[in-house]
Image (tube, rainbow, N blue to C red; front, side, top):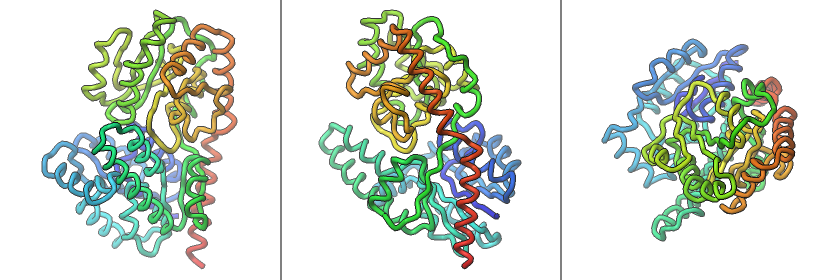
Length: 400
């Protein structure tokens, strides 16, 4: 098959976000047996990443993206007023022209469109179209609205949520099939667009590789770990909330508890947290495994999110008991109380962390069950095989 991926940002092996890594591994796995091309935005500092993708893909088109330049920022802000936030920030004449030129000179059997770029799917002619909803953006928009306390911004967030959901459903219904990462997202969409073909394909995450080899034993000390791209608003909000509202409660009962914050591109609000007692902001690291190996508990205090929360799966795969909010457990399929602990209010979250720190038997049970859940429910070879079969069936249906 000749397959084209339409992405927002460049997927590559060292992508800081789980969505970028997930897409990269899908793309790289398919390229072993099929002809795969890619078009995506790339920032000026990504020359090495572009080169790495050109070694994987038959053709890689990197559309210049300037995150801090004034005029492009004003352009994106204007479109975010006219369109739902998630789609407005992706409007680009350069991207549109590059895609038109590629489609004019190359025929593809199937085009896989990242959910953020779904508006560009209307340019595709003569190929089957698959919408890859790594996240359901209307769910994320709803969480933003629900958590906003300022009256005017809350009203705007509600409007953005409602129009995001309307647009997302309209786009999803127009594609030949839709990919989602969790059964939860599948059920949500099926209730609203029952006639659409929707397939569940689990994500790739670090826990499928190195993290599963970490010894299943309680490390010394009471180190807590939070991981994630530290310029993402959901992660910034979560870690600030944890440091200010939950960590002090934990230290009342476990005085030596300390938090390590690990992830790429920490913004100023995250870096300032290093001034707080018992908080270390590590920033970007080449390998997460050493940090999981020395941590006692993995924390996922997300207040908004969608799709599958990969940092939760990584913690379980690493054999480290995980405490998450209900949002932090979104899409994983893990059972609260067996595979991980789930708590939404600050006191309950802190209590769950302390219980794991002080109760060796509970620590061992949750750690073992979490890893077993990942091993039994996530197999990358099966996932890629299912994706190939799905794409082939979509192409066959188009040829009838």
